[in-house]
Amino acid sequence: MTAPREIFTGEEIPLPSPILNRIPEKINHIHLMGICGTGMASLAGILQNIGYHVTGSDQDVYPPMSHLLESLNIKVMKGYGSDNLNPSPDLVVVGNVITRANPEAMAMVAKNLPYVSFPQAIRNFALKGKKSVVISGTHGKTTTSSLAAWMLNCAGMDPGFMIGGIPANFQVNFRLGTGTFFVIEGDEYDTAFFDKGPKFLHYDPWGCIITSIEYDHADIYRDIDHVCDSFAKLISLIPGDGFLIANFDYARLKKEAVLALCPVHTYGLNGHSTWGADGIVTENGITSLRILRNGRIFTDLSTHIYGLHNISNLISVVALSQCLDVPVRAVKEAAMEFKGVKRRQELIGEAKGVTVLDDFAHHPTAVKETVAAVRGRYPLRRIIAVFEPRSNSSRRNVFQEQYSRSFSGADLVMIPRPSLLEKIPPADRFSSERLVEDLRKKGLSAYYFENTNGLLKTLTGEARSGDVVLFMSNGAFDHLPKRFFEIMAVSN
Image (cartoon, rainbow, N blue to C red):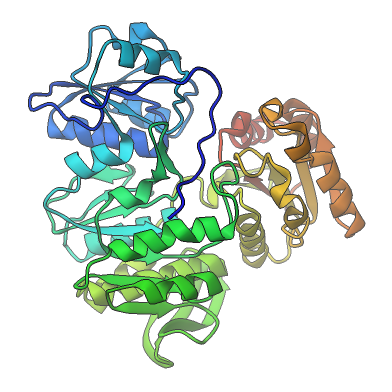
């Protein structure tokens, strides 16, 4: 497998091999650099539950992870620097947002402190003695992981879990659990500045769900073949007595699944997989459907989630239930009682007849599926899609054309200039202005804004009773969903 290329700026720091990957026998204080990432915050909670004194540092501190860390009384230093390592911790966990030139990383090396990556810490502190169920794929990892953990909880199996979002049923995204299984969201993004391989290769998968494979993370991967290299390696790690649950709606995943040494269970909505669904109807906020196994009805389900992408996620969890001997009654209970995940089609509230939703969608396929899901849920209402191109890939023009096909279910689209665009080479930069022009050529009402303040002002004046405003970003988006809702709530 070809390792993803490393991208960083600044001085390269030599890494003293005796320190790298060594976890001291006696540990009291563990410090996490980049602690406000979804995974790092959940790791902080797990380490604290084990009994360690945990501190952390981060440049960007925003909800929901900032609220989670506050509730755990974990001290978070804002910004990076050598002072954050005084007194010296016994171990440093380095998040993948940290570059070699980070002043705190430089101080860590200068002080000769032991350090590991986030996935290495997970493997050593959370997964020991557990059967790891890795939920991976380009899309749907967080919702699928949350559903899987909730299903095992409903079955009384007390799973451990670590999820890249906060499931509403648990109100936390981590738990050690006393049961056999540990559900972990497995990301194909790189591990750390000293380990450019994907994070999910550290998780010792006994079982695995792969929801999809598409090109993403353009700052790390060259092309779709490069992405598939990583997933092929993940599949090869699953032992013969484990299992792979693969979405065969994706041709590349179907191709890679033949590498598995374990049983492969297929699912999808195209009618060509072992597990599928039909009779999908959403009415009055409830989606009803039939789960099919080899074309025959396995069970009927009702759930509050909506959209074909979420139904696909649900099918994979039903397949998982059969691999883990979960009773059907627990599957039905989990589906009906699942409350979703924060920032995944999350209802912020309704004010002056305007419904406000917040979603994490950023890849063009995820944006398209989310807009389609909201259109299906609110078929007679005006949909205003507000999208921030913020991820490392969406700020690049690799998806410029594809985004122009992602908003067809919306009535009005608003897009700001991407932040930190200056960090992208000029020839590679995404253009919000061009996207707006392309959407207008397709007959959509679309507007470009230089900044979020201008967008908020226009949106506030434009929104009217009956509208559904869908915010989509993989970041805080300047807290626009909450700010807009609060303005609407107090306006006359």
